Image 1 (cartoon, rainbow, N blue to C red):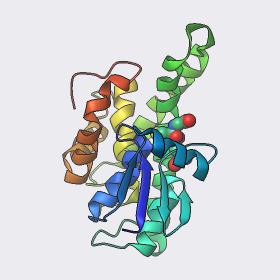
Image 2 (cartoon, protein in one colour):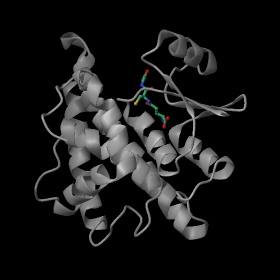
Image 3 (spheres, rainbow, N blue to C red):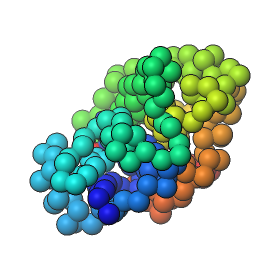
Length: 216
Ligand SMILES: N[C@@H](CCC(=O)N[C@@H](CS)C(=O)NCC(=O)O)C(=O)O
């Protein structure tokens, strides 16, 4: 097996890559970061210790979007996650939007809760909540009539959308008025690759600093 993934099952960015691997049934060695030895290996590979990290035949690939690009080039499967040409540009654009404008404010809210009371940043959290409200509105309009983020086909953009919307809804609930977005999140969670990633993270829900809601 040439691929090794350093990942934790409850991590949102790890789920983004796991969904891409599961979509294509790509075999890999799961170096779970529940394990101390895997953590030491991760630190040697990437001093910033952000995860996931992919190792392929001795090469280290960092950052989820480029990990999925690497998989598309070197381990292609039945699912085409990044189309050619203009369609690919749109998919990459949406991938950046989910990472930057859903995942980032969601993480701000969640990570703030892990800080000591005196170090918390209520102003930043209010900004993150306002920013999520804005992107929820934009996505709700954009998704009208679409099955997946970029149309009929499941892509990299949906790999990014799944964990970001999964946890963002826990941190700052998508309001009922955003019916297209809520329905899209439900469709994502019903997809087998995503359901599998969510199930693998289920035993670790106690790690969620805001308290995991009793749903999903
Ligand atoms: N831009 C990175 C983000 C990765 C990231 O932030 N991962 C989180 C886990 S979901 C992490 O490493 N957290 C540990 C830390 O911040 O030290 C990517 O796309 O891979």
